[in-house]
Structures are given as C-alpha cells and as structure tokens.
Length: 194
Image 1 (spheres, rainbow, N blue to C red):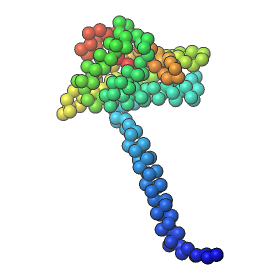
Image 2: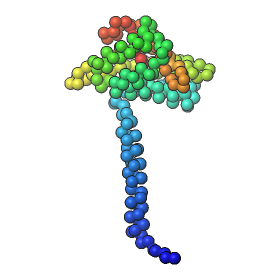
Image 3: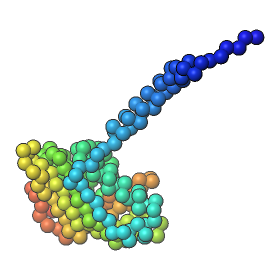
Image 4: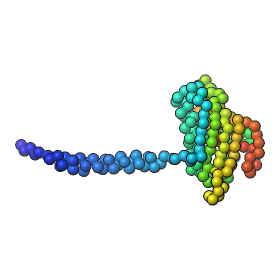
C-alpha cells in the first residue's frame, strides 16, 4: 500500500480547480438574479399609515405592499401584461372595466416614458378573513412626454379608495372609487389603477 503526501499548495490548486467552477456558477446565478431585480425610479414613493401594518398583520401587509411594488414595476417597465394581471376579471371603476383600463394604459404607455407614481395611503377597511382591503389613497402618476423634458403629472387623485381582493392566492384590484372628475385626454373620468 502506498501513501502519498499532498503538499499544501497542491491541495489549494485542487480546491481551486474543483471549487472555482462552483463559485463562478454561484456568482453568475446570483449576479443574474440581482441583474433581474428592478431598480425603482427616484420619483417613486409609497407611504402607508403605520396603523395599516398593525391591522393587517405582517404577512397580509407584505403581500399588499408587494402588489403595489409589482404595479409600479409594471408601470416603469411598460409591461402591460404584468400590469393587467394585477386587475381582477371583475374590475370596475365607474363606467370602466378591465378592457377599458387596458386601453387607457396602452395610450399612456405609447405617449409617456420614465413613469413613476407617488402614493400616500391609509387603511380604511379590511375583511375579517383578510381577503379584501380598502386603502384610501392620494397620489400622482408622473411621466415624460419627451426625453428632453421633465416629468409631468399624467394623473392625480385625492381620497380614492382602492379595493383589493385575494383571488386564487393573489391580490387583485377589483375597483377604485371616489369623486369623478375629468382627467388628461380621457374620454370618461377615470383613475386607471392607483
């Protein structure tokens, strides 16, 4: 029987030879994951009354906030399909339904770049099973109609109630309610999502 002694530098070379591909793969995988994360616009902000977290509980609060983050990401990246996936099939806003909301977002995405939103929200109501929440919101939808200009207000809203329901485990917007008023080049009064 023969034994061979490995020198310290041989072990290090062996470790590098075997471990390097693993480390590179891990770096590339995590780097790709980091690269796919969306960096929100500096113009985006969401402020929620701290009482909401107490009333909703940690898990529901995180899920509802994730809904608004996903909506913002879809707006900033002009991802119409991701945005429309946040609407319930039963969505209603005055005379609008999901189909007309889609048309409005198509018009907004075609005309504006560098969009972002501001939200100031407070919890108005939550169902006993925590599958429906109503958040009253004041806010702005900003966008740039020309790359050489600053953002302008595309839409703004005051005391609008956003009604979210949980459908098949996902939060969806089922309606937005508040005082109707005319808005920038819309044929019917509407606040499209937030």
